[in-house]
Image (cartoon, rainbow, N blue to C red; front, side, top):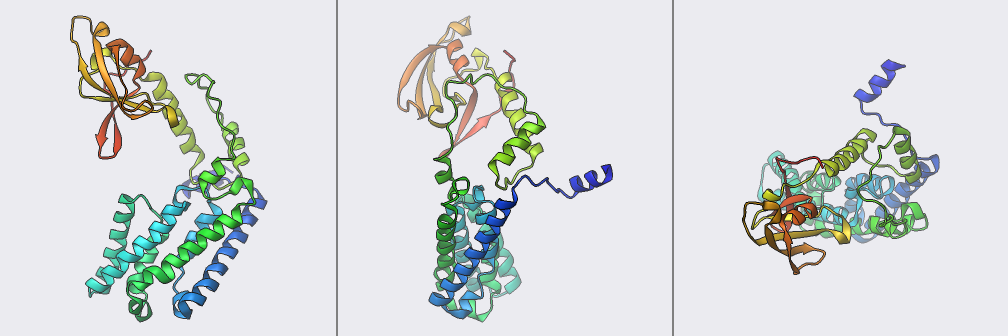
Length: 321
């Protein structure tokens, strides 16, 4: 028994917490999606184009087996397929050596999908098909991006929305499902955390009744890191410096980023005054004045601006409260 358990761990075999009903629904959704793609694509783009929709089979698995996954959402599906197809067609037309063109098409497609935030694994297959699909694909040139690729993506998205909508726990896309979920109690003590037992996690995953693309151990590790960091994180008032950015570490509408624009420096840093402005999140464009100690109690993390994004700065002198 132990040897079997060890073997399943080595091969990454996770316990199935999804009900038989959910598995059957996923299979039926995959059937409906592929049949719809083939019928509509054949009607609008012809038989030759209908035969090059193989990568949509992988998208179908994501949309109907993992409907709430990040790679299954509309923008990754639409952007991943269309952008990768465009990259593949360009490489096929510019680079005469097929193997080099194929490798470059997939590599560039991954790079572009990263930057445009539409990572979708079947997009790699679409880029490859644009290069290696033969004369029928090459003859389509950039028309390949519209029919069948864009057409395929739109069809599978429409089918996914319609098929999943009657099933409240599967509504697609994810934002549509989240609208019908109970909201967390905002009055709860945000500083109180309790350990999650293995059986609690198994129960929670079984209640979701949908494939979650993450292991139980990873979920527990994320929870432990997040709650443990919250308990350990505390700024020394002397670390609050002019020009730097700080966040309160909250989520959703309560998240806020402040920049220190001026500060006094004396023998008692806790009593020094700081002037700040809110540069992102709740209260944006507001200004205020606090003691350095008060600001340190508010701050939970230091940030660096990276274009339109923010990066967390590791504080070397974190202190336990």
